[in-house]
Image (cartoon, rainbow, N blue to C red):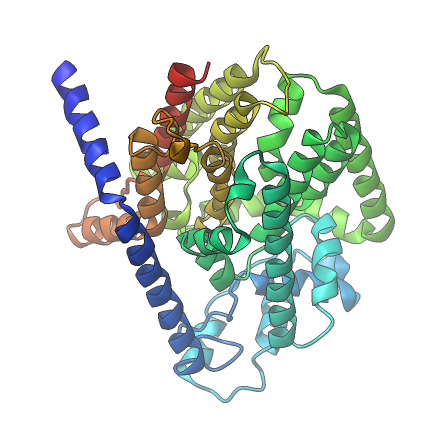
Length: 447
């Protein structure tokens, strides 16, 4: 056992040694530039806007938001979750295009709107124009939210002000999930902005408003757990009250403005879970405990996948509870920030539908740790000193870029040899390893 641990430490030290400034400043830029150039070429040369070369909408997931908001705007709220109505609407967006292989590919697929009706509050302002114009405005709003997040993090995370805003922007876009957010037209930067607003208000000891802001994540409630769990475990009464008041407001507005849509959503919950189990669902891009369990076990045994998923989720939940149980609530301390840095990624893994673009949210715990780095002041025990935390950070960076494609390659291989299409999602293991390394370092050198 000792030899295995020694070999593992040697491996991590080797990874850390590879993360020298010269390589860190060059390789991520080459990877990011290559991805963006490939994406732009596929859009502007081989596509037929609003479709890309594969028959999917440019901005991909944004079409689901656009579909839901447009159907409600057009007075079809009772059909909001009817897949045939959604298919007809999405086909109408390309009806002006001449028949081609790209258009025929589009007619064979649908991206369903399965979000809660409350999400229409967010999407409706971006469904007032044609698809491409709405998508561009959506992207601009996302960049605005990202800018607000960086501004607030530099202001409220102790020590992060030592890094320029330009450097933080650069780090953000060297992380592949950020590029995935752009390519998929997702809402990740809006979620990140709400997280940072909640964090900033907690730092300012305005807990009621922090909880109220957190309730805005009602359109993706599973991603509110990263802050809701610490607030519940430490029983921050004012924050919890703010969250309850916020949720009450959203529930009242939804019942008042979207009654038909709410009724339709309640009737379609079962269908939504069937979609998540459908063979066409891109499980290879899911990085949660649920996705991990399905990839390694579902093709062999559905019961085993459920058992593994529940076991991992319970262990993750207990770990996060243990991190905060009876912990001192002191927003001015490094320990408070470290607890968030460790619990946030695990809470993310508890979400069922955790796609590659959602992993962009890992930037927040990374910045929490990076802000505590005081290496230049001579303290060689700090986080980014070339040790395990830096090694695991490099592994998380690489796995968030390659892990999903590695799973896809595994599935293709197993299919070719006529075996169950299993897959091992390495990103989840790397994220857990990063949390373990940060917490271990904190216990050894800070506490």
